[in-house]
Length: 60
Image 1 (cartoon, one colour):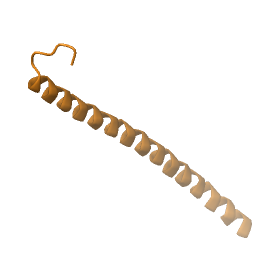
Image 2 (cartoon, helix red, strand yellow):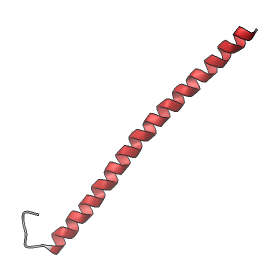
Image 3 (tube, helix red, strand yellow):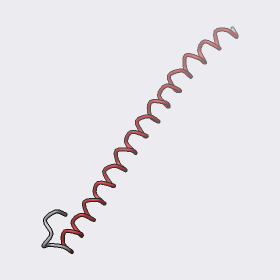
Image 4 (cartoon, helix red, strand yellow):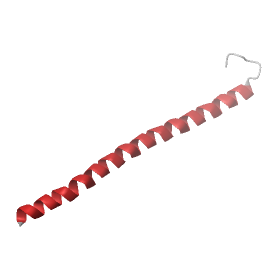
């Protein structure tokens, strides 16, 4: 009886732990993508501001 309950416990815990790990990895990926996108947007804003400050410069 004790061994059977141990197997059932392992059977339920393994998928839960696996799902937790997978969701954590996906969360990290999404967070990295989001921060990269926001950095890109910030850079674009700075670039546009610099362009508006120096309209005569072509190399900017």
